[in-house]
Amino acid sequence: MRQLSPQQVFELIEKNENKSILLDVREDFENEICAIEGSINIPLQKISEAAEELDPQQEYILICHHGVRSQRAGTIMASQGFNKLINLVGGIDAWACNIANEMKRY
Image (cartoon, rainbow, N blue to C red; front, side, top):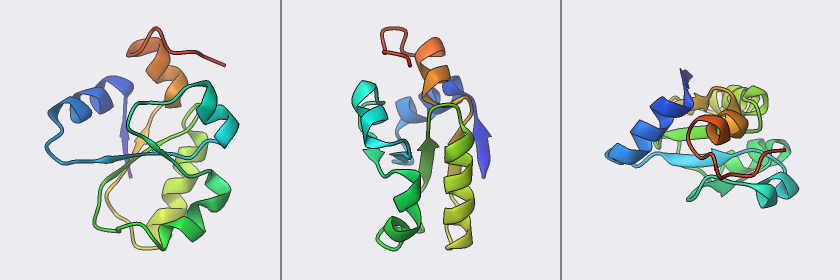
């Protein structure tokens, strides 16, 4: 799994050439506080089941609060055959600090 900074993820999204899917593995209540536009929310405890319905050939950018749960989600997904995974280092908190200053933090 690749580890990318908020700036690197932002640049990847801006290029939008690879059509990466932003996969937020935080809890629903966290996602209601703030989220990156266009992301889909599948909480970590549901990721194993949900992975059965996701495309293992697709690239996913995994997001959580600080990057720990998204790393765990990536490990789970990799064990199920996903190999195009990116972890947002520092999570949505780092995203809010470095990319989207107007974003609520918690």
